[in-house]
Length: 619
Ligand code: ADP
Ligand code: MG
Image (cartoon, rainbow, N blue to C red; front, side, top):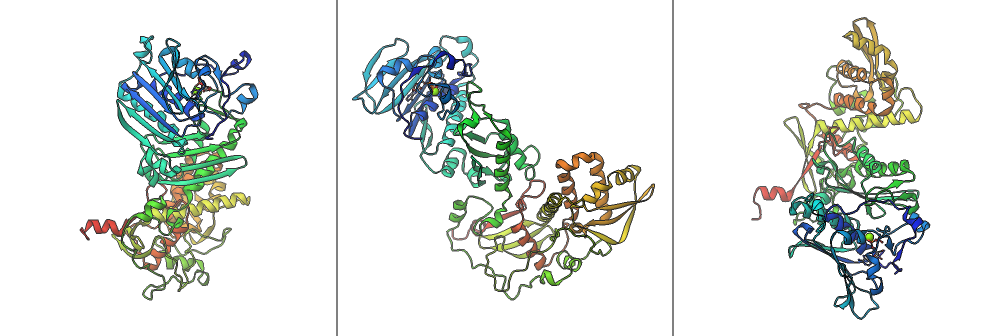
């Protein structure tokens, strides 16, 4: 990308001009900045400097160290439909450069006072072309090009009036450069305003560039994504829900290096966050799609900010899965030395002191959870989550999927030296939080929130496995020893009758005893310890809102979430240490376990360093 071939600047033939999306490209100073930086990148620049005065209205100068323009072509560069980037229709369809319309310099020249100063590697000196007079003369400059644009809209005061304050126009100009900078970490950028350096981004690896441009918070909360889908490559970083923002101001999507606003991509990203980000919060991301240029039409809009994919379903699928996969990885399980911040280097450099000795499961004081295989299921539940509170003991009659939601993970071997990412449980705090110790320090877990996510993910897994296997009953269910009758409203009775199939699919068996009485006969195994009647009532209420057809789409997720909330361990339930440890191990193995079903965090790391600061140790 850095050493493009020099080609002559030629005027496009009429039949090609007619194929190019027509329209005005210069709306405000930032449009000029965008076009000029596009040109510098197309020229193979490795360093681009943007100088502005009065928010770009008085002056925009873009300097690059690219291949330059030969003097004879300087006047041609300012002509309409003159470009070195395409020469025929085939090249238009497979265009790999930022520009191809040959109109930007001409458009800018028509509304402002332009000068081009350029030197190619073959020339002994540079040449300066004064746009207003057309005068061309030798000048001094190193290899590369400077385009200077003064007094934007000087001849069209009506348009100048539409500009906002200098500060606003400046912000737009900086954003225009930022968009380029995020796509090209291999190019250095600097922005000056009124003689002051206001931004400087040096050549760096992508994650460092993201940090420099978008801030440490973005980078610390971003997880890498990388997915190859046939010819299509999706990579980049997506922010964990913790760093979501109230505005959609850190959402960057690129197609073959070009910043785009695209509905297919936005929708796919939003869907990927569906299950971990709730309400109006806006995810942050920098996503890069690389694909065969003939599979995307960039000639849809004069500013090239919109594109059209030949196969938008494929793009949607790839983006959705790339982001979803990246977000699903529990950060606790990803990297034993990671704190909740996902930036691996940020985490490992925090804390100068040596890590404390790693707690081990083989410490004799730690009772181990009894081996799950040796214990029958209902008893195992009792071991893990205490006694059933309101349900009669349940027996298992129907379990299509082998992993019930609250099943413990296999107990660690007595000599297991694995440093558990979420550490070893120490205590329970006010019946709400679990406190644990890991290598970095203290881990605090919201036990209800964490367990709710674990149950929800298991229910989803069972649901999907059931659907894939074509089973009518997807969710593992177990019959109650004694059915639980309850007084029901007419609507509840009607819903239980009409939605019997949906209920069965959800692992619930609710029968009608009389026009005003229902009885719960079976509940999902995962939820066997919750209140069966409460569960039945909320699921009926959810179902009454939906028609059965919506069940096959996303409505089942809402219902599964309702169910998970019922099945999750409540606040004020006393847990034993083995129960707490089992929960921590389940979190490490469960997708999306860093957020509860409502998008809030389930755990936080408090490092030794933070604790030391709190106590002013070593000061
Ligand atoms: P386009 O980029 O669509 O070709 P422009 O009007 O932006 O049209 O530029 C016209 C031509 O001028 C380009 O095709 C390119 O050959 C040349 N040019 C513009 N800016 C630069 C630059 N910074 N370095 C080298 N060549 C440039
Ligand atoms: Mg251009």
